[in-house]
Length: 173
Image 1 (tube, helix red, strand yellow):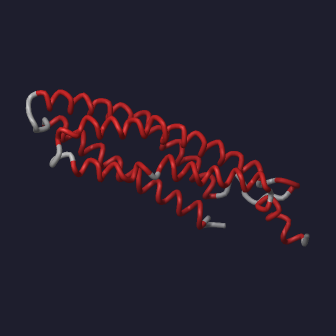
Image 2 (cartoon, one colour):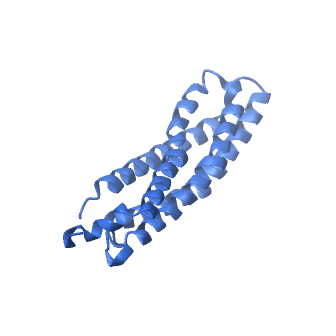
């Protein structure tokens, strides 16, 4: 193998490829469904009685796909970074922009998931259950909370898309 190809030896390693596969699958499974939440919220005014079921479904997706998927995403990313230095070659460095961005992004996503979305979605479900006991309309509290969740969701979506771009394109290298 030529000296110029040595850094890419890690990329050809089976362990690296498996970690990369798990990393990509974790992104798709954990973060992909969250892009559909806005669509679900958009139908709630037309079908208010469906709100408790839709919100509970989104909370289950968070619990069983998003949260474990983000853990796998982080672990696989760490394994990729560690495996990239097989045989003394350094395909990626912990100081590469896309690596630093990735760590900051996953920490931010864990924070917003557990510090904002989890509690807010539970609260929204309580509002929906309460509001629908007295009719087919939502309270101002529900509407305001729903709007805030949508705004933070859009910002989170932008963060995810930027992160995928940086992971694929690897700027500043």
